Length: 198
Length: 198
DNA sequence: GCCAACGGCAACGTTGACGTTGGTAACGGC
DNA sequence: GCCGTTACCAACGTCAACGTTGCCGTTGGC
Image 1 (cartoon, chains in turn blue, cyan, green, orange):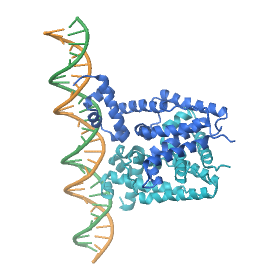
Image 2 (cartoon, helix red, strand yellow; image 1 turned 120 degrees about the vertical axis):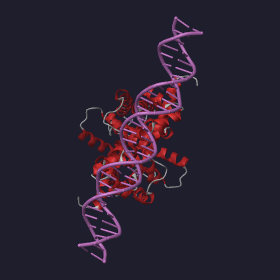
Image 3 (cartoon, protein in one colour; image 1 turned 45 degrees about the horizontal axis):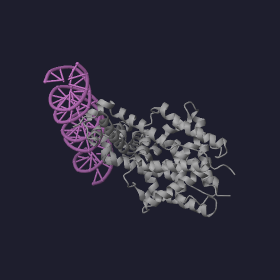
Image 4 (cartoon, chains in turn red, yellow, green, blue; image 1 turned 30 degrees about the horizontal axis):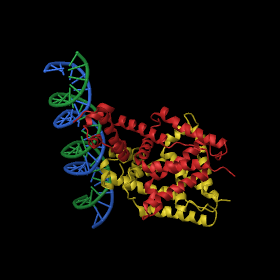
C-alpha cells in the first residue's frame, strides 16, 4: 500500500459525504465510512477527531460549494428567474449537498456552523437583489432577503419532500419530462414572483 | 397505577411524536420515548411492534393531520394567497409535524407510506386549484399540481432550513416581527405567483 | 369468590457502534 | 544503512440501545 495522506483524507471525506447525505449523522456508522473509503477507521479519528467533527467539517465545506456554485446576477428579470432554475438544477444534480443542508436544518442547534464564512455568500445575493430592486428590474416587495430566500424555496422544496412531490406527480410519469416540467414551473413562478408591477 | 390501555398508547404516541420530530428515527431511543411517556418500554414493543413500525405509524397519522388541517378553498386569488399564509402559520405552530415530514423525506425509500390515504388530500387541492384556473381566478400556468406544490414550498422552506433563514435575517432581529414579515412575504409571493395575467 | 387472561415492569442477553491501543512496516533525515 | 517518526491496521474494551423474558398484581367473566 502506497502512502498518501492527502488521498486518504480525500477518500474519507468523499465516503463521509455520501454516507452522511444518505443516512444523516446518527444513521451513519464510522465503520461504513471507513470501509467505503477502503481505509481503517482509526485514520478517521486521527485525522478528524470524531464522527461529529467530521460531519460538521463536511457540511461546512460542501455547503460552501453550493452557495458559491450558483451565483446570482441580476441584470434583468430573466436573470432572476434563471437563478431559480439553475438552483433547481443544482439541487437535482447534487442531491447529496441538498440533503446535507436538510440534515443540518433538522439537527439545528440554534448556532450555524461557520456562519462567518457562509453569511457573506447570502449577503452578496441579497445585495445583488436589492440593487435590482432599486433599478426597477425587480418588484420592491417582498424585501430582498425574503425574496432571495423564497427563490431558494421554489428550487429546493422538491428535494426536501420528494415523497410529496411524487404524490403530486402521480405514479407513472416520465421522470425526464417531469423534471423539465418542474424546472419550467420553478422558473415561471420565480419570474412572476419577482416581476415589477407594470 | 390505574390501568388504561388507550391512555398508555396515547402517551406513548405523544412521546414518540416529540422524540421522533426532535431526533429522527435513528437519533431517537426507545428508552427515551418510554421514559418521557412514563411507561415501561416493553409496552411500546407489545403495542407497536418495534421502533420503526411506531415511527411510520406516527408519520402516517400526523401527516394526515397536516394535510387535512389547512384546506384549500379557491373562490378568489386572495384565498390562494391566504392558503400559503395559513400553511406557513401551521408549519410555524406545529414544528413537530413539519419536521416529521422532512425526516420522512430524507429517509425516502421510494415508497410513500400510506399513499392511498394521503394521495387524495393532495388530489383535492389540485382539483380545487385547477377549477380556479378554469374560472380565470388564477393564472393557468404553472399547471395546478406544480402550483400547489410551490405554494407549499413558500410556506415550508423556512422550517426546512432554519439555519439558512437565520443567516438571511441577520443576527439580531425581533422574532415576533420577523415572523410576521416572513408571513407577509409568503402571502405576497403566493399572490404574485398565482395572479392571472390582467 | 375463583381463576384465567392481560397490563405492566425490572432485569437481562445480545448486538453493534464508538473510540483506543499496541504493533508493523514504510518513509526520510543523516 | 541506521533510526526516529509517521501512516496504517487488526483487534480490543466499553457502553448504549434494541428487543425479550419471567414475574407480579389487577381485571373481569362465571
